Image 1 (cartoon, helix red, strand yellow):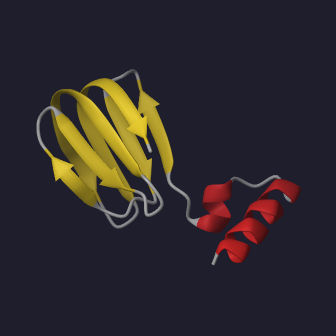
Image 2: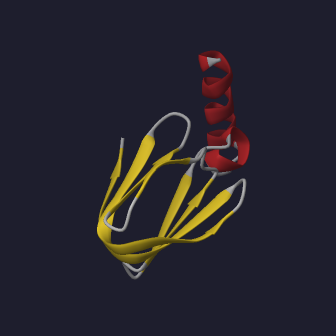
Length: 90
C-alpha cells in the first residue's frame, strides 16, 4: 500500500495535480475562522460544542472553539461552523 501511495504522490507532482485528486487525501479549507470544510473525511470521532475530532484515515483533525456545530455532512465533505480557535492535524 505504501508503494502505491508513493507512486501516486510522485505522479501527482509530475502532473502538477493536487494529491487529494489522486490519493483521496483530506483537504481542509478555513473561512474567516468561522467555517471549516473538510473534504475526503472518514467520519466524526468526537463531537461537542467546544471540540470536534474528525478522522482522515491516516490522521485526525481536531477543532477547538466555541459554539461548534455540524452544518452539513455527506460521504465526502463535512462543514463545521462556529468560532474556530485552533486546528490540529496529526
